[in-house]
Length: 260
Image 1: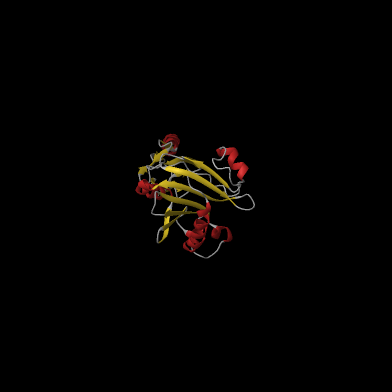
Image 2: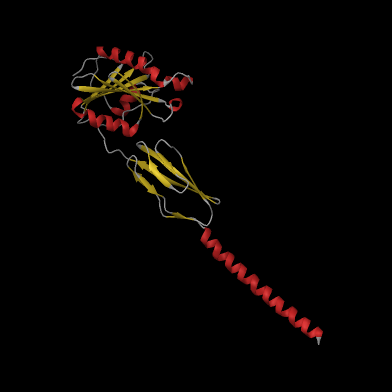
């Protein structure tokens, strides 16, 4: 009798274990469906300082990372804040899956198109891209008049080795407020010296590869100068603000360029 009871109990226990195993497998299958990353935010387009929450669900931890904090930052919870005008992407990692979400930061102020800033470019290379110069009197100058409704001209200057060393844009003084908004949407303010304001293309001086000088002559136009930050090339410890002297020297040398 006891043997029969023991056998019966054993059979019942086996059935219970079998049912528990099946239930466990079914639960695991359902759990697997839940952990799969579901991303609703496919791309992001913002103006500077705007924010948007990335919409994503996953059963695993989600890690967000910005490819370039200059254009956009992202919090641990996926809240994106737009920085300077440009393009980057947010990388989302969940378990073994990695997704890139494109981010475009648009400018509210668009006074003129971005000039060419390839410092290794020769004069002939630039003309091939941008077209024939409106000023053929000098081999060191490529000039384009009526660059935009707000910018009267665009000038590229080349050194003795025929390499692009400086880019200038003349903006009508009546658009001075819009000009500084335009520059601030794209660059970081660094320093000011009398009538010259210096901006750079990075949050930290040691990372800046481009310097932008905005010079107000007090006349009909404001000059915007783009030059390479040579301190970044040499990894100099001198602050960017010391390049004000370099920019002023460049500005003085431009007096010989005839204005139309």
